[in-house]
View 1 (cartoon, rainbow, N blue to C red):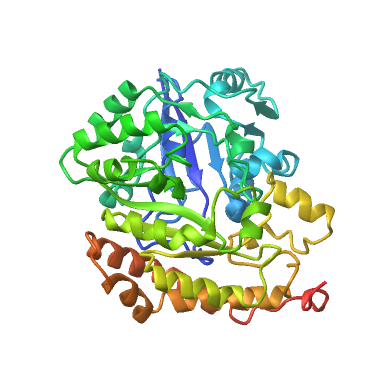
View 2: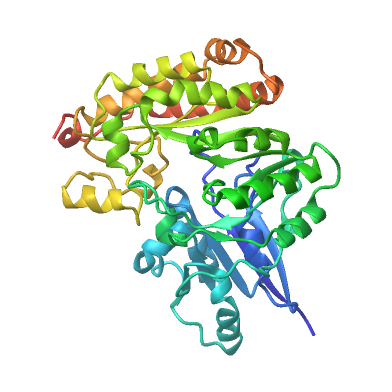
Length: 446
């Protein structure tokens, strides 16, 4: 029997680079997990527009598009082209989960929530020609026995630098600017480590391979984290992941992370202001402790990708220099700066809408580099310019080398490469937005 054909697409506008775009593609897991849900009578292919073009001249039975807010307009363009050819288009992803009515003007159906729970029903309806508009997964899937991602469908460039794996979903924290708990629930769900072990055995072929653990917070269950670290140690990988500063406060856990092959942790510091942290429900962080915690992590040979966000309600025009001074003093290996962005589905967006402070709903500007709302203690223009100044300062070669050459660096060349791999896109953003014009109505503090 002739197989049906599906094309899964990650849309991307290459003319509008994002500050987090490296010269090599970030490991992609979402679409490979969706691809694994198709029954055997389907032939599936995947295209990431960041590195390859979509071929619109194909004989297809289904197109699936997973879009972030900043790329959803490009996703709509792709969907509209395929629908003109009478090819069914289904859209999913973070933006779709909270803007389903808008998305349905460009798609035949949308998937809201975790695809594993409703995918069989969707395919059955498609086969019968009775596709519904909305497929909403009620609840969250048990992570036991979920199929392994179809990594073989990715472009080879994805697999050159590192692979990716997911071991947990959900987050008990409810940070105001984040939609993770809204999408995946506040309950922290764990994959059985036996299944993680089996999946690792299929992707780790030699010692020192690089691996990204894409869990939103690897520390939510300490006992599970310990067992996971021991498993990663068995495979002798070099891994990166996402954590909070709590890892430095748990006896022996930080050292165990190092022993397991951890070379870098992405930590969302977000702000140096206690008032800001309390407002975003991260009051467990004390800014006075940060330098000591950072040095504790670095002393184990683990580097830090530190995230800082500008535009919180207690940020004034001095926040940019304060943050840069801190980053340079702490010698944070890979700093990441962004503008506070009220994404759909976040408590932040609800609050700013109620306060009448959002002035820009152009989704292409929701890339965490554009100011789209009225800050409290500065004008939108001042926030935009301050962010660009900080970005330019931190990615200057002199700043990079100063941070990396001070003290012992177990993975100096990895962090050197990482900084310069991001520098091109960071400077592209700075140059593109340097002379950004705001409408007269938003030039000054509201």
